Image (cartoon, rainbow, N blue to C red):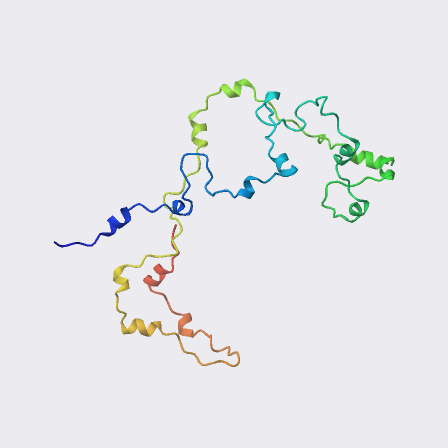
Length: 239
């Protein structure tokens, strides 16, 4: 008879041993016993006054009609609570700025102390004049109200035609795109020897001084007559 080894799934299917039973054999699940057994010294020890104070249950505030503690300042003061002392009233006052801080602070702060001289100062006539709000211009005319007759008028066909926006000219051509699409034939074209020769930059000797004769036009070029093809190419593009 052949005995096959156990597969991995059968090994993982076995329940894990309970380690707490090995460390605490007296543990019984379902009762109120502690997991760790208590020592006789802990069972016979006497608690201190602090421990007894902390063992007291929390005060029940539901008798005031609420399920939580009352908000401070939200409920009227009860007779048994009394009123705050002078010390509490003094501590509740907002903190005041020191005079040194008021003198050294920046101009960005919105609050500035006003001196007694400024409070008792009598404004001059010029200041009172500048304090007056600016009035409207004497020639100011309020917008006129449109009467009911222009609102009910019906525009004529001529008025409707003139109200239309101006149209573009029929021969108008928009600006040409600076990026031209290159055809596949131009991409695979092979330049001739003539095109390669014209593509070479003109080689001129290095000029150390300005030569006025270098750019002189010949007499024959001045008297030359352009061909019809050149005259046609010289015309600007109509748009």
